[in-house]
Every structure is written in C-alpha cells, then in structure tokens.
Length: 170
Image 1 (tube, helix red, strand yellow):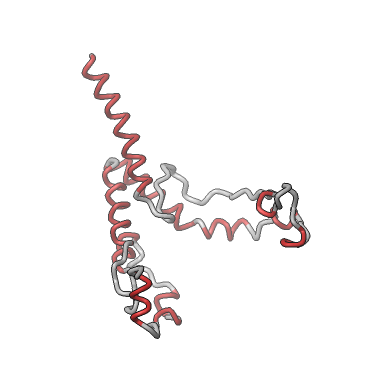
Image 2 (spheres, one colour):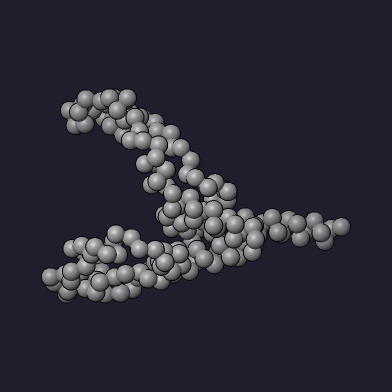
C-alpha cells in the first residue's frame, strides 16, 4: 500500500511539474489552459484610476485629459472581443483534447516545437515567413489576406550592416 501512495504522490508532483513546463514553453498566443471552451468568454472591462494617477493618487487631468469612466468601460462590441480571442481559444481546446487523449506529452511537445521554431535565427535582411510555425499551428492550409497582399515589410532594408549589428547587439 505504501508503494501505491508514493507513486500517487510522485504522479501528482510530476503533473505539477509538467503543467509548469507547458506554461513555461508557451508563448503569448499559445498557453495551455485546460478548458473545453468552444467560443471565447465575454471579457468584462473595468476602469481604474491607477493608470492615470499622479503621485497623490488622483487622476492627472492635465496629462491625460478629462476622464469618462463610462467611455472606458463601454466595449466596442461582444463580437469583436470574441473574434480577437477566437484563435487562442481554439488552440487551447486542441491542446486540451490532445492532453486528454494522448497524455501530457503531446501538448507539451507541440508547445516545445512551437517555441523552437519561433526563435528565428535568420538574417534581418532576408524576408521572413515562418512556414514551420504555420505548419505546427495548422495555418498552412488557409489563405489569409497577408499571404496575398504583401506590404512594405517584405522589402529588403536599406542598410544590411546596421541591421546585423542591431541584431547581434554590437
């Protein structure tokens, strides 16, 4: 009986370590929140004086203008908030399903691969398209406006040497 209790304690501790490990390898867009949410939650907005407070703790009207708490709390729309979080919610759902079906190693491996691929060692002078990350995220089969309409970011920089010095922190 003592052996079973040790293995249970060990598995609980390893689960905590794995949870921390997954969160440490998660980027801003990919965190592993174990939920079965299909649609992003409604985001409740709040207003605080802390953002615009001066040294005395009062709202600084001269720097930030007159304050309207009703305008700060008023949302652009519930649909816009949900659309902004749609991709993140779907990714969390996929990671949770992978965790429940295959075990903790599957989402942990996906998050590690995404982190490795996100660290882009290319030269700044060359155009960068992170095809590897698109494949891991499942975006390789979709066509987005950014794929068709390339902007000014695709043009090579004027001074390659300065860009390399900036990247290598020389």
